[in-house]
Image 1 (cartoon, rainbow, N blue to C red):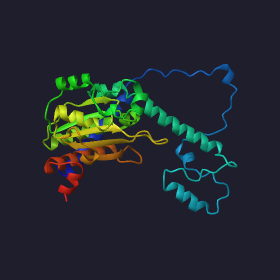
Image 2: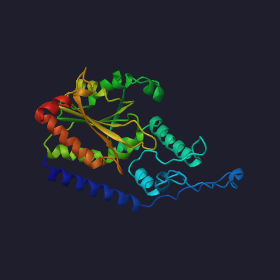
Image 3: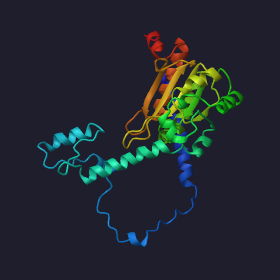
Image 4: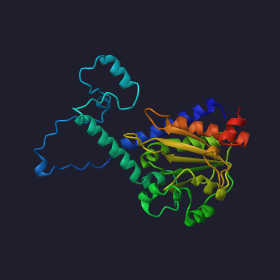
Length: 303
């Protein structure tokens, strides 16, 4: 499959997504509920603008800079927090509110679950790792997130086709928001790309409390040629929608990151576009099939 075929697949998926969005907006919807304000808050006056807007986020708070244009160019060159200014030895109120707002985004991404509607729309059934104590245990015990529990192994043996060319898996990882923001766009590109390359697809599913290392357990059970895991990345301040696509060639117990490849920082508006990320993923899967290798071995074989 060459670049022209991949581009045709991406354009086809974009048309389908736009058509679906147009259909949703044209359908009648119920009226939104009217928010009410408690009596004791009706006189409250908020005199600060929302600091998370793009305009204010990248606005300098430094008073009387020596070179305003140079400072403006520096701030525009990165998403890092530059030119935040200070009030004596402390942050300004605007900078502090922005920090707290971005931290809240991170907390939400870490602690909430992926919406069931998305999993239903993508036709994914759910299995779970050995984490039993919720998100807190998942964060404290990454080793448990690398192992499927006994029920998951039984379900995968019952439901999944064995030895496909490609097995596609979605895991929540450290950001539910990342899965919700990107999986819907990536799925059809990966499926159509595999079909165009004459690669057989396994039965896709979702792993709850998922770590990258769970690919080894899945590989031992299903024995795919290439396993693709779409998983939420660790969120940064204000950036919760970044997804990674990890790939492994015939993963098995004992494999580590040296045996894997990854397309990371997949998100719209600043990262790798989800459609392009999906196309890159299929291209790497094809290289794995061609060279019968993954990770460091693939890099050496493809030289």
